[in-house]
Amino acid sequence: MGIISRYLLLELIKVFAFTVAGMTGLMMLVGIVQEAIRENLTPGTIIELLPFLLPNALCFAIPGTMLFSVCLVYGRMSAANEIVAIKSAGQTPLRVLWPALLLALSLSFFTVFLNDLAVSWGRSGAYRVVLNAVEKTIYSVLSVERVYKKGNLSIEVDGVENGELIMPSIEIQDSRRVLRFQAKTAKIFVRPNEEQLVFSVKDAVAHDPARGATIRLANDEIEIPLRSQDKDRKESPSNLPLRSMTQELQTEMRNLDDQQRLFALQAAMGFCAGDFHDLATPMWDERSEALIGSEQRIHRLRTEPWRRWANGFSCLCFVLLGVPLAIYLRRADFWTTFALCFLPILIAYYPLLMFGVSQAKAGRVPPFTVWMGNIVIMLVGLWLVKRTIRS
View 1 (cartoon, rainbow, N blue to C red):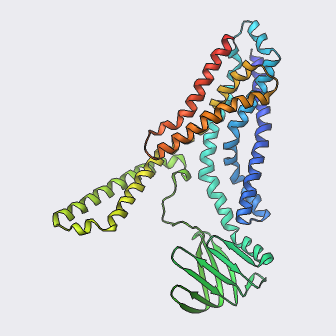
View 2: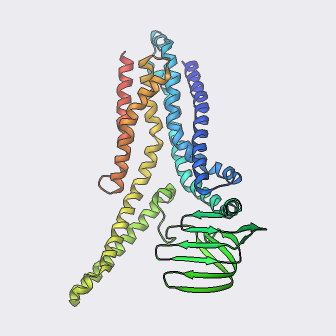
View 3: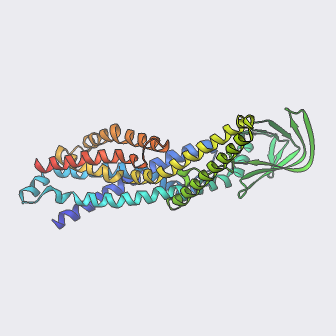
């Protein structure tokens, strides 16, 4: 049986390696095309992005390709009556399950690691690549089209010569006002540490339509933040590595406790002083929203580790479902087996996962609820294993 186990393991690895390479390449191609269209990236920038997008693509590709691999290998094996031969030799079919389960268990831990790597290294690295390419991208677009529009920034030029924008017209919008700049020439460069796009302008005129003001600038710099959100905003838990989750959760809980104590003290002082007008000001609505936001972030910090582990171990759950079903169906047509395996995953696993994640992030259910989909698939898989052994 050692020979059969080694044979199965090698076959699974070969099929999995070939399939995951193709699926990952396809997913990365789609992701890069979308990113290139959205950011107007150059071919050199796209090549720099590849290693940073790889972990995230593998996280999505590994569970599905592992399910496909077991459907192919065990389906062909069962259709060729090799399982019947093993049973006739007095061996239980469970002996052929462990190579797939061992490989799936290893890949589950690896997927959890990749998920964490994609968040802590991949996203930040991809952002740095795109950030450093902003200058080249703008020059490239303006050289061809003479118009560049992205988010709150709009640029029109008469031409680009020797790295200078000729007669640029720059418009910057934010939530409060619109600013327009017209200059004789301008140069663009990026400050990565400050995450700012800087225009070095000459003989410029600045217009503020809201105030009706006009200012002349001989030689000056116009700074534009490259992040649309507030830089002081706390980082999303989905962008944090697992190693920092516990510390971040403890910090957020202490901040919430301090805020609650401070607001309770201020409310008590208002009651004691009889200053009821102060207690009805919009400031207290803002404080209430701050408390709610902090509580929501605590729920998300508690849920995120459970979600990542559940996503990673979907690989093991899929294999536990796919192997006995492939043996039971005895079909060489692995596509049919794969479709029959993926149907309950599509109907039960993903809806339960999304339900558990959304409810746990809202604080309505405990964080371990995100494992509901995994548990259901595992129970169905164990039932199929028992049925396969009996048949």
